[in-house]
Amino acid sequence: MRLIQITHHDLDGYGASTVAAACATVERVVHVPRYSDVGPVFEDEIKRLGRAAEREILLMTDLGLEEQTIAGLRKFAAMNRRREDGQKHRLVVLDHHASSLDQMRRLGLEATADAARPTLHRIDLGDPEIAVLIEDDICATRMTFEHRALFATHEPATDLSSLLSAVDAVDLWRKESPAFRGGLALDELFWEVVSSYVPVGHPWHDRFVSDILLAAAASLRDGANPAELERRASEIRTGVVDALLREAPDDDPTLTTRMRLARALARSDALFRPLKDGTLLSFALDSGTFQRVSDLIMDAGRAKRVVNVQRMGTLSFRSNDGTALDGARLFRGGGHRDAAGGRLQSGSAFSMADAIAQVEPVLNPEKPAGSDSPFAALKNWKG
Image (cartoon, rainbow, N blue to C red):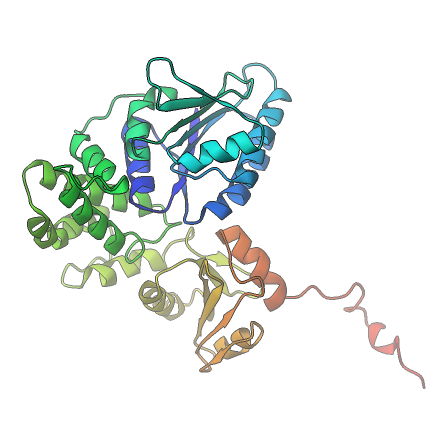
């Protein structure tokens, strides 16, 4: 079955997606930074699954379950009841936030403690295809490994023990653990690479981050201390990039990592979506990456104007025809003719689709019906 994962945008969330990818083919991963955005993302997936012809697995990891998300659990169960036997989707929710249990109880869903494992709680939604597990004494990365039978197709081919130990120690802040200092170093390395090189939305993103986490965890397993891991970080990153760009026709190993990757990113159809006026829109790119990639896109003639929308609602426009400032002005912004910025009216965006839905009607407003008619100009004429 096709497997989609929604996970948190932090070390534990990426640890969970790394484990999932080691146990199954994950077709798409959605990384959500804010728990308040989980509900809308989940809602979109439920709507898509309601139209899907074939069965799928939706795996949700390390996401605090707030009111809208819990409502989504009930909607998923209702959607499944409308599907034929043998076509029902599977939902696996692996969470480790104590607050999720509180929210469940408040909304009338009682958790049952596992007889053999009292810290593990299960929520029964009356559907055997839905497994909601909450266990607050281990991290989501370890939960994903220990409960892999719910979604896995094979056993991991690599040793995940050091990754599990490091993430578990730092995510639960177990300072007494021998793995804690290594976990801190792994967390620092994670935040350095998660959005600075291959952005969320690009097909290489999860492989890039996971390969770095696995290589760093292997160094910890071999006895590297935090300082040694920091010194090896550049070598680890370069090795992962070398593997990604092995078949790239224009790769130049004499350039920096960001310069090398920018060429591949500029060719991506997944990272940029065309708007009606030809502007290319990207979502949540690191500002340095956006600067390099947008320049390459315009040099290649793919677009004359590019806009990047950040989750917190800021927009960055770049152009080579003087229209960046025109775009920014429509979003209460300003700047230079070819480099300007503004802000979304709503103040934030939670996905590429959400960013497009907010930017498109402002940049390219719909014309009133009949406005293209040759008689439209005569409508209010009083001759």
